[in-house]
Amino acid sequence: MYGNTYQREYARAIGNTSYDLNYQLQIIERELKKKDLTAKERSNLLAAESTLKKQVQLKILKLDAKKSVEKLTQQTREEIAIIQKVNEKIGDELDFIQDKLADAFESRTAKAVQSWMKHIREEELEEQKEVLVICKESIRMD
Image (tube, rainbow, N blue to C red):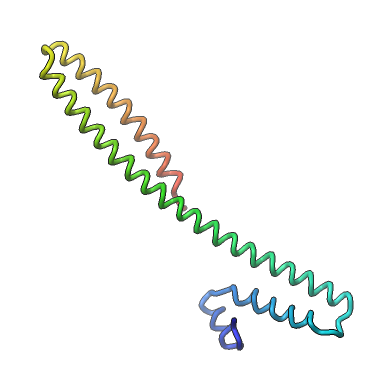
C-alpha cells in the first residue's frame, strides 16, 4: 500500500494510522518466509502477527460501530421529526373538534366538554413531550 518511506511518513503526518499496521504485517510476512528462522523467532513473529491482526480487526469494528451509531442517530432524528409533525396535526384536530362541540351543545355542556378535552390534550402533550425529551437525550453524542 505504501511503497516507500515518504508515503508512509506522509500518511502518518495526515493521521492515517492504518498504514502502520499494514506495513508491519507486510514486514512480518516477509520475515516468516525466510528459511533461517529459529523456532523462537518464528513463534515471536507469529505472535506479533496475531496481535497486529487483532488490532486491525478492532479498528474495523470501531469504525463499523461508529457508522452504525450515526445511522441509528439519523433514523431517530427522522422519527422524532415525524412524531412532532403528527403531534401538531393531532393538536389541530382536537382544536377543531372542540370548536365544533362548542357550537353543537348548549353553553354549559359545551364548556364542560371543552375543559375535559383540554385536560386530556394537556395530559397527552405532556406525555409526548417527555417521550420527545427522552428520545433527544438518547441520541446525544457527547
